[in-house]
Amino acid sequence: MHSRAQRWRRHWERDKYLYLLLVPVVLYFIIFKYLPMLGEVMAFKNYRLSEGIWGSPWVGLDQFRKLFTSRDFVQILRNTLLLNVYSLVFAFPVPILLALMLNEVRSELYKRVLQNFLYIPHFMSWIVLGGIVIALLSPSTGVINSILKAFGLEPVYFMASTFWWPITFVGSSIWREAGFGTILFLAAMAAINPQLYEAAAIDGAGKLRQVWHVTLPGIRSTIAILLVLQVGRMMDVGFEQVYSLQNSTVASVAEVISTYVYKRGIVGLQYSYTTALGLFQSVVSLLLVISVNRLIRAMGERGLW
Image (cartoon, rainbow, N blue to C red):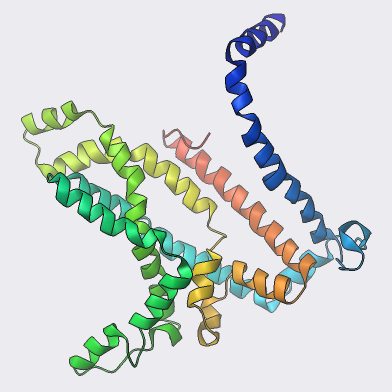
């Protein structure tokens, strides 16, 4: 114990200026990430604006009982989980495939041009991008429906159909984020030892076998970490994307936890009720991250911790 204290003191004297660099970061997390957590106490109170958080009466678990017996709860939970499962199945592999293809491009100029085109949508806000999506899919003036009409087909009301809306949601996610998501995978591929490819080529492996036996194992740990993070967001769908694309005709499939919290909590002033929902969402997300991280570690990967 004594030696541990001496070792820590020795490290402090050697690296004290590096530790001091951490102070602004620690303060940022304390002020903007941890202190706001005190507001979660509203989930156990009947919050009143006139009395404030601490003056409002305690109600125990009443807000949670109200939440779990609500007809809306099952619907928004189902919609949130389904949209995230669709994104995990269809959108998550796309950056990996794009990175694998870009990694095989030998012309640096062509590769950079492709990357720039793929990155641009990420820097557009969902409000702008949502407007573009709605305009492209418009049944009267949209490009997609104009093509369908040219082939003698009936126009499709993509944004008003409960079947097409989730597909549009996932497709717009891929359009905006797939290109930018390739950055991490390309960086992981750059760290693979080129001698492994040379050895595979000498053994007679073609491009596909090199990808399967060298590239994919080389980025496996990156895929595992990003998968853990993606599962951690399983209870959270980006508010801006859903809010910019949804409308009342598809509310049965488009209403998710984030938009519900905004409408009932901010607009409807039901702060305690929506805080209980947010707390439930956070606890489930934490359990999912811990479970998947343990599963990933059991499979031989490093995981997040």
